[in-house]
Image (tube, rainbow, N blue to C red; front, top):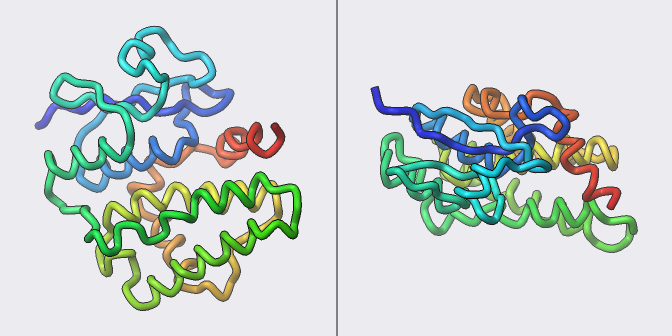
Length: 215
C-alpha cells in the first residue's frame, strides 16, 4: 500500500475542524480521489494560519501537497505532478479542449459582485455557459467525451460554487434551456469523488463568499 500523501486544504469558515469551501483545494482532492491515491488531509484555518503551515507555504495559500518530501503549492502544478506520477487512470485533457469553460469562474465572480443589473456581467456569464453547453452537445457528456478529465475536475467545484452562491445571493440559476450544462453539473456533483471532497454544508460556501459580496 502506497504511503498516504499529505495535503493541506482550507478548513470551513467558522468551523476549523470541517472541510472548507476552496474550489482549488477540492480540485486537488478530486484528482487524488479519481486516481485512487491515498491521502491524508490537514485542515488549515485560513483566518488563523498556524506557524508550521506558514513555514511550508510562506504565501499562506492552500492547497499545498507534500510529494517526494517537498511541499508543492498551486493546484495547477499539483495536478500536473499527480498526472505524471500516477498516470493511471489518465486524466489529462487534450490541449484543444483544456481551456473549455475556463472563463466561467471569473465571469461568475464578476456577476456575483455586481451591484448594477445592466453592467453586462450576467450576459458575460451566460455567454460562457452557452459556449460550454454547445461544446458538451457535440463532445459530451464530459469535456473530453465519455470519461472525466482534468478540465472537468477543475470546473466541477467552480460550477458548484456558482450554483450555491448565485442561488443564495442573487436568486439566480443556470437557465433550464442549457440542458447539456444542467446534465453535466448533475453528473459531476453526484460522483462519489465529488461528494467525498465537497464542503460538508452549503453554509460554509455561502460564508466563504459573503465578504466578497458584501465588502
